[in-house]
Length: 281
Image (cartoon, rainbow, N blue to C red; front, side):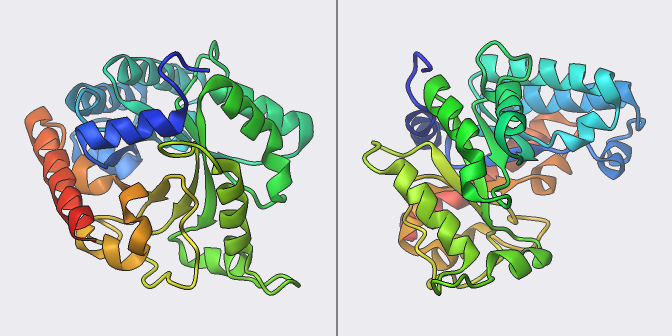
């Protein structure tokens, strides 16, 4: 267990102190070009270090998308390792966006890659895919409990293709997405002030009143900014669960780089707008 407590408690504290905002670290080729950087390891390193320098001491969560580092092989992963280390040292919680999902020993190995305390890519939380069955995530759930880390499970994602799986109705009349939410509510039962097992729920999905989002855990909400959702949409989408929402903004902040002051200003504006929206929700 982390000496500072379980992930859910640490996340609640970070959002209360720094604002409920998660900023992605997404160094895709077009954004590197927009920053005037080459699409190579040097550009990747400059991009990542700039984001960490600008934001790690002031935002609650930084979320590296591992695919944009993996495409450069071992050198890209070395950049990611350093970014994770520096971000955590500056006080940000690091959510590794890797969307891992498998069975048995393979799922255990994925979990160890990110949630074992001495792992080079040790992070505060990890995104996972439950679509080999929620039970396939058990090795990650167990390691997260042991190490004081968290999971964010894909439940109701913002991509339009997700609906064909997540809205599919099971024989018991409950949708697949609702089933995942129910599993997470069970994982978080009795945890205070917030459970460590969250769901990914898109901010662009509109009215979700037919789903029980009261899982007593965090709800990672992609879609703010470039994908079209705004902070003002959050109370309508998430209802009474809005205080547990962790809105994710990537391009909406990152497009203001490479200027550190501009990145900080963009993040602060989003954090303020989100605080105001949550307060009225």
